[in-house]
Length: 290
Image (cartoon, rainbow, N blue to C red):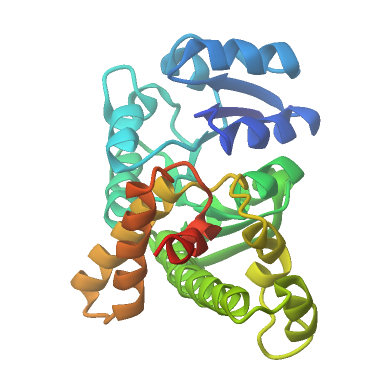
């Protein structure tokens, strides 16, 4: 019998992710808070657009969510007409939202009481990764639930790993964002220095990218940073939300994150410049505007 999958949340990430599932031949139902998005998706893909969450999850084997933040998860999972009360026992719930480890642990608990499995599965790779089906997915939860969900997630993943029990996916995503924040700031300072020194920044990158300074950010973002083009999808507003989660978890577990805290403030400066929807590589613009 064909697997029935529900996808809740058709934003810049969820829209193409759900599309990959439909193209793979799965029976896909979708729901989005803005009904126009649901209609648009169902017009473009061989799947079913639903008017309510209850309708979307009825009889589903796997329910996937990709929404904004903790409060949105509470709404779609536990709100009236939400996922928990309308999804069948034995189904597995997968959440791709970047959220707190605490909310993952809470949702896993309420899902368990309803006879459902839960996997926290935040993703990395941004809009381009979602569109190309090449996301990195970091999962937390029970092995048996992960094994049920993994073949479905594989349709939009290039790397997929179970990191440990519930919450470990979210904590791994925090590690990812902490590393990225420092790398982008370092690259921004390096490129800004090159420009101020009168060097050809593109030639500098061509040389140093062959050595120890090489990074994914340098390979994929340096050219657009030099050209002041910041439209690669993962917005400053979202990064600040993620770094806030990292800093809160650090306060809880006793970690010291001085660079992360500083870069978070720098992103606040970018927001004040009107760069809320610029991508995260826009840190360089803050230096140029000093």
